[in-house]
Image 1 (cartoon, rainbow, N blue to C red):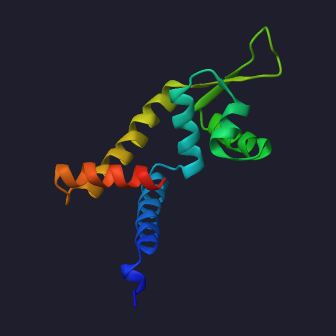
Image 2: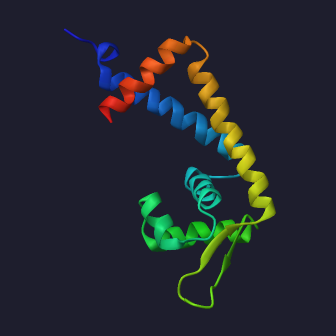
Length: 136
């Protein structure tokens, strides 16, 4: 009989929890939540995006996204710009302070990647990536 430790889904779940806890702890050190970091990252990769696209990416209601954006705007990490051709769709951009913070966020994820892969050979890393892609 398989124990929980032998169960693949349990191992994946535990690895996910470890990853989530690591990210949450590191983000908390720089004063961010996971949703705020994901928001900043999305805006960094899609400068000038609109709130609706961000809501789809985050899988959150518009009201929730509005609150996240208000907080980030108050902290001077983002700004909203109203285009002349569509006054209802505010475009989202990072401030210089937000761009600096993105570098810290990216470093957190590089550190996590290094932590995960440090005990794996290059071939094992490639195998793991392929297997995870296969079951997604």
